[in-house]
Length: 131
Length: 115
Image (cartoon, rainbow over the protein chains, first blue to last red):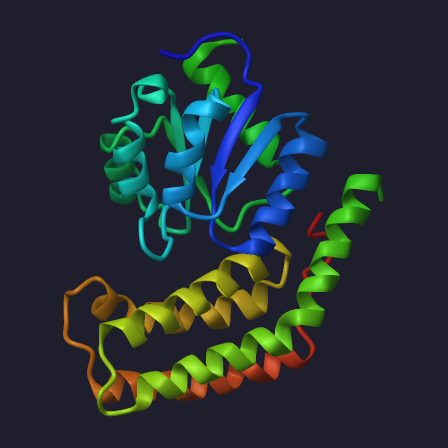
């Protein structure tokens, strides 16, 4: 169960261009502390030590995709209850409903606007947890 | 334009500089997909390369480029989702769109005011 202020985000994204722009958007624009992982496997290895407030997961990645990664993260006791947001281009209502059923608190459409990404995430956080 | 916007535009400019190399990789992946023995691994590789470029280009405001790339994804989605077998006609139908994408990649147009 999450509460309080959103500070630390673990972002899983395989595309280097998107990693770079998202890091800038989240750190410089949003002021968050960000750990970026290039794969689901890397996220599983780093999640407990980084202890994020929030997981931000790309849906479509080669190998372990976002939903599978979230399922595996839920098996790590230290971070099992941490909220997650998916990022994807597939945001039809039935698709968003599926992601919510998988445990995501919300979905951010891709491509995203770098200048408003942090505000979008903060709004989702506030809607779900206050703060 | 603020410091953050300048930095983001710099990343977008770098994206354009690296685009020819990315397109070469996509063309090579498409060539692999066109061989008769091509199967799911070749489809996965090509699809993911186009998918990544679709997302990057859209994020950097190259909407026309992103829209063309997305048309390729749409064509291949049924095969990617396992709804249909990948067939030669579908693979062939990618070719003219890929040509269009290569042409746009030579001078991608960035949407004004993307930041």
